[in-house]
Length: 102
Image 1 (cartoon, one colour):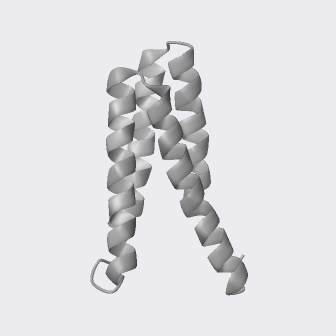
Image 2 (image 1 turned 180 degrees about the vertical axis):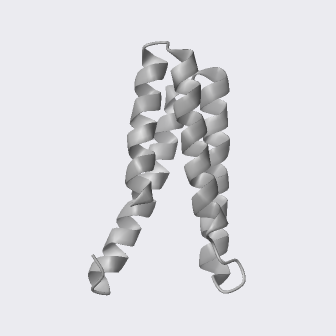
């Protein structure tokens, strides 16, 4: 799943930030932003209704936090993003389990 790749890349960004490898941190966060952009662009805002709007807001929140984390080297912002994206991932997994799509 795309979110798995996102979380792996986020882990790399955290490690780069901690090791003060700022170029690599920036590249990893840029990749995270690309993935969120892809997820956001896949939303059908007309047919998705309130759910699509809420997902759009969550993706915007994550994008802003990633930008702030990169700019100010704040690992706590990355943790916030991890929490949101993990919750989204778990929600999709639970939906798939309930509806027979694992």
